[in-house]
Length: 435
Image 1 (cartoon, rainbow, N blue to C red):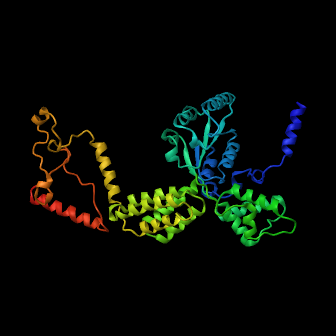
Image 2 (cartoon, rainbow, N blue to C red; image 1 turned 90 degrees about the horizontal axis):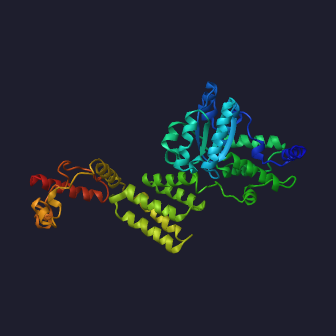
Image 3 (cartoon, rainbow, N blue to C red; image 1 turned 90 degrees about the vertical axis):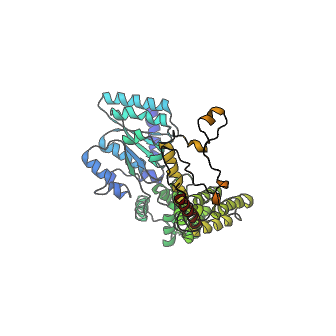
């Protein structure tokens, strides 16, 4: 037993990261997240009610999700258990649930914090439902991914989703001030370098404290670092960009919407940011192809050709030469006439197919390879359009029960203006021919 006490004393004396030493002890000490923890914040109101219930914390790394979960357990006198979906499976979950049930028989509740909960598969997520419903555990799941896409609807229906935001500069500065107070020394940075450090953290509270530690370790007595030296020391580019997390999706979304909004300057800016941060160029190329299909469509059929050519050019040239091909494609799609008519038409057609997928096409357009089918009228009355005046018969090709439908509405822009003229002319011919 004495050996255990000695080990515990040694563990207490072991060096701890700055972020751990600065971990808040109360909810009102958490930096940032004022929309959750301010006077009228969602978590503040739940704290006043005395019951938090099960929650899903959605937000980027370093925004306080784990810390807030710990503090909620403290506020509610629940036993805090933390697991990670990366390292846990059904066997460990069953063990945690069994221990929580035993705890409950003694009157002690359990708050189970599951980090990266989106990494659990559907079956593993379903295993939480019974113990959430009977009160065996209060679940707090943390995820960097959109819960709507990554978590079961049944799980979401039993938990409230709270969004954690990247820390603003004021909150990051507050963390630095706390760190300087704890260390009893100022960060050896010029004003410009300090601003650069805040930018490098990219809204991540843990990152800003880790960077601060690196600066203190590198500084000689009396030394003050400028921005260039700071960048060399921490060996990071600003802003930090995680290709698997929110920055990746935010910037590709910004690029896509800039193209859709016909702003080539903003689109090039976001393209440059992604390439500079190390994003996979072929991922960007695929999205440019998608933009050409979704947002330009037949208003400029050449857009898809240009986008595909840029993808092939990058594949052929590699980086950095191939990046210019991507820039050319971004400029082209951003300045092309826009239309989502084909995109909307496809969605409408798919909806009709799902609603009326059992209807037979009209017999006139079906082949009759057997005598029986000929006697049943298959193909009877079909008019070969090339033999009709102007190569247009105007027949109705829709199932008889459904009747003719309109799903494609071309816009009056770009090449679709010409398509619209053709459709209008064929509609005129139908009316003239009583079709």
